[in-house]
Amino acid sequence: MFEDVRDLYNATIIERGRRPQHMHRLEAFDATAQGDNPMCGDRVRVWVKFATDGAIAETGFDARGCEISKASADLMVEAVQGRQPADARALFAAFRTLAQTGQCPACAEALAPLLPLASVHEYPSRVKCATLAWQALVAALDQPAGTTGETSRE
Amino acid sequence: MNAIPPLFDVARVRAQFPILSQTVRGKQLVFLDSAASAQKPRAVIDAMVGAMETQYANIHRGLHWMSERTTDAYEATRDAAARLLNARDRHEIVFVRNSTEAINLVAHSYGRGIMKPGQAVLISGMEHHSNIVPWQMLRDAHGTELRVAPVNEAGELDMAAFEALLADGRVGLVAITHMSNVLGSYTPAERIAKLAHAHGAKVLFDGSQAIVHRRVDVQAIDADFYCFTGHKLYGPTGIGVLWARRELLDAMPPWMGGGDMISSVTYERSTWAEVPHKFEAGTPAILEGIGLHAAIQFMEGIGYDAIAAHEAALTEHALARLSAIEGVRVIGRAQDRGGVVSFTLDRAHAHDVATLLDRQGIAVRAGHHCAEPLMRSLGLDSTARASFGIYTTPDEIDVLADTLGRIREFFA
Ligand SMILES: Cc1ncc(COP(=O)(O)O)c(C=O)c1O
Image (cartoon, rainbow over all chains, first blue to last red; front, side, top):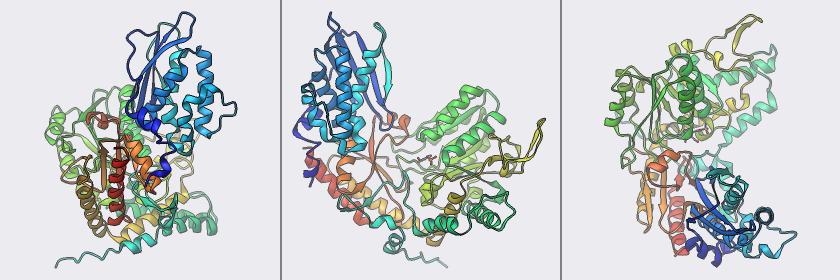
């Protein structure tokens, strides 16, 4: 009956949505922020720890929401690992285009781990589920060092 | 003599809603989201298009034929709304954009104009955001208090707690839903009004959901304010009604200034038009008002007895079918309830459920339903919600139930 939703609810998304590998709070972190989707009540909090060179050393998250938002947060953690904040932002921009349109014009290799979410563009009301964790991440990256807790709204 | 319930022929009702023959993603549409906004019958569509094609002009100001015809048509809606609510006086009907605007009007005009700082507004634990936020804004701007009467396990207003919150006599206004858009529960309007009045408070009912399913008589309830929104009553968006007792409207200051709401204007001062026009600044939603008249006539044509009987049967069927599915939990078990059924599925989040239902052409709502505080008190962040209208059939509920069972297997 649901063969047509397997493009979005594929094995990776179901697995990551159900058993996320990075859904935990970081004990020591440099920045944290929360993303809220007021449309549906989804909420993601992201914690980030930076390496001495400013790159993202570790990311963790906590999510209240659907399979898509959890799976996306989980894949995001891996995609931004070791990247400089500017690169993580650029990756979000590319991912957002992918999520909204299904296209990734300059489809960098970095985007590969996020491709399981590519068909979310065919579910317009679910695109925000896929981008919420990224919103929170960028809000955390935007914070001046030493502040926490800013809320980002998509 | 017992009245024989009028025959309700759902196929004939459905035939009047052009949209219901649509297919969605190749499947027959199963529209179970009427509580968010209802579909429109042919009569409403034709009334609006007909007005545009034959007589449209601005109202209350033209001296020409077109304007007079359109003014008459628009004002006839006021009579229809007064009849629908059994208002004493057609001047008690104030046109607004929707329920949200009606409640904000009361919060501004009655709240700031008549209530005193230190008085309290009492709402319930199952309000839509539109009946929470205006009272918070009033609290912050005017120094009133905001009290919340809890809802019990079954999803009914806790009447003992409600009464206790009135006891100190400081509540100036009770503002409460007449039917929950999440739990489907009705509130006992007559008892609420009686208790409120006994403690010196006025009472406003948010009838956005209730009036769709049940006859409302503001005099029998002994309400002070009652509001509803046209688009849930099979009418257009952009038009709603605030009913209030004449003496309250007379005493209340206007909240928006402009054309139509004045009697005369000089640079020194202006004087206000009579009610209800005092509260109707600017060119109103003329076509939508005309459409609302058609919607009210449509409801009256079917009759609330038939509507209520049809929807009670649907609700009973839905509760039985959904409760029988393993892993489905129905949220809200009020004794007195209507055709709005919220539920959760153990294996999947409500959004995922809604997306999979949508792929089968079944439209439900998922989320917090603009009632975040209620959801929080239930320990939930979202539910799926199926809601029924006059065009809903038992077969559609069966399709929903069967599909939910399959969704559960999908997420096994
Ligand atoms: C109980 C209740 N109150 C108020 C509203 C607000 O209606 P509107 O958005 O038309 O103002 C709704 C519907 O959204 C509702 O269900």
